[in-house]
Amino acid sequence: MAKAVVIVTVKEGILDPQARAIIHAMESLEFSDCRHLVSGKYFELDFPELDGDAALQKADEAARRILVNPNIESYTVKLKD
Amino acid sequence: MKIGIVVFPGSNCDHDSYWAVREVLGKKSSFIWHRDRELSSYDGLILPGGFSYGDYLRSGAIARFSPVMEEVRSFADSGKPVIGICNGFQILTESGLLPGALAPNDSLKFVCRSVQLRVESERRPWMSHYRRGEVLSMPIAHGEGRYVAEEDVIRQLEDEDRIAFRYCDSNGETSPESNPNGSLGNIAGILNERGNVLGMMPHPERVVEMLLGGVDGRGLFLSLMEAIA
Image 1 (cartoon, rainbow over the protein chains, first blue to last red):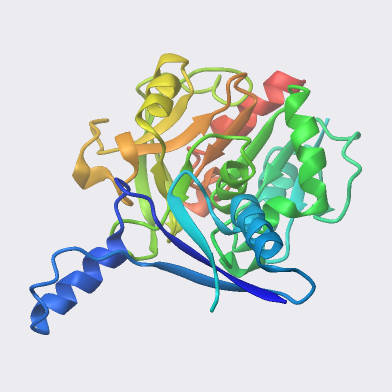
Image 2 (cartoon, each protein chain N blue to C red):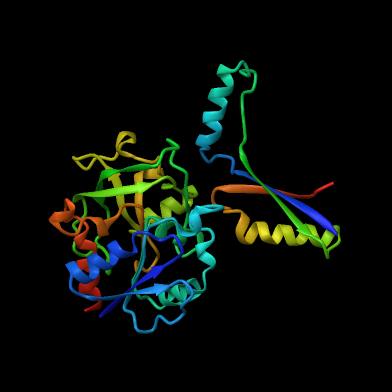
């Protein structure tokens, strides 16, 4: 069995107003040394019947077909420890 | 002549569209449940606004997998008119029938008010009752309406007369102040290559009679009627 994790973030170059709002709030909380922040979505996909490689492949396919909109988002896929 | 209005779980402008087509323009119209696949009796389709599937994941991202969408694609590919309004536009971009995407508004706020639009195209079947440069007033109501696309896509849309509307001020000037959601190039609506598929964030079906506060949306429906008459 394997669990895969898909992390989806706003693509570089695309305005992320949520990240902008968070970083403004962080500045007022004395985290002003943080200059850049990327926000995103986290998905955990459980494949009880698959081994690691197959689970990664499936998760990647799911990312491409539904979890991610490649026009505005990028993603990474990895196995959950 | 019969216009179909596709209803997804969470659509909420379906009845407004029905009213516009049936009661105001006096044409046949009926609802198509998202599980139906039979579209052969229709001459045009409306994908109405709303919050299909609660906007889960991304607006329009789940509705694009509804059974009816395969048929909507064939319908559009055959050259018949399809319009996606607000959530309908989001569904059309998610399904790849129109390029680009609709990202959360730059203000992060749900914006619900009337805006000015500049007509950018006079193409059939949707735009022939408008004149290029004409300024219209239509309501918007969305949280995810910021049109985003790669630079070369925007250029292609401009070169191919595929921008339908831009947000503008009352003089027809586009500016950051008249842009309600941060859309690239103030883009409010776009066409596919053939011009038969239109996606737009503003709501033309809400301005089809004076009782509703305006008639600037009528042109779209009149253009459609003329094209399929």
